[in-house]
Amino acid sequence: MADIVYTFENHVYLNITNSCPCRCEFCIRKNGSGVGDAQTLWFSGHNPSFEEIKAEINAFDFGKYADEIIFCGYGEPTCAYDNLIRTAKYLKEKLPNCRLRLNTNGLSDLLNKKPTAKEICDNLDIISISLNAPTSEKYEALCHPSFKEKAFPAILKFAEECKKYGVSVKFSLVDVISAEDIAECQRLADSMGIPLRVREYTAD
Ligand code: SF4
Image (tube, rainbow, N blue to C red):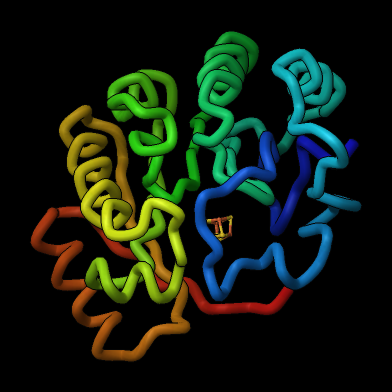
């Protein structure tokens, strides 16, 4: 079994699935089997059940990390949608003052074949959405989503809806694209009233 709860740079993360509909050129999963104190973030055989996630949460001392927990890991958390929502509810019971953040590729509605922003925003506090590119064509070329041209519009719609539901929404991108494309992403994010964070690419 891979690590479900792990820490990296003073933050605690939850790894709940290895599934993902993208193949981003910059994905850190290509570079190694673990991040931070995780031995491996690859599950062998099956993604974890809710009971397995819950057991790992109960075994972890959140102590100094109890102000924010981030759903991230080696896969897209909304691929494990039911476990994501159940785990968020469980954490809110267990650590009611803890902020819950979702790092997502924004493709939850397509993955789950239903609108998901409301339920996600009802259960999590911060939604960080990977924008990655300024246009659908450039997104497809960089992230290779299985949903092809439907992906980028779905990400923008998901972001708009999360904003409407009143949570903290942020876009992010990795600085593997041109300065012109970063500027275009910034204009797009500004036009939607959503902050954009440019992350430095690291191979670790
Ligand atoms: S969406 Fe995230 S997990 Fe999926 S391929 Fe891209 S960077 Fe990797």
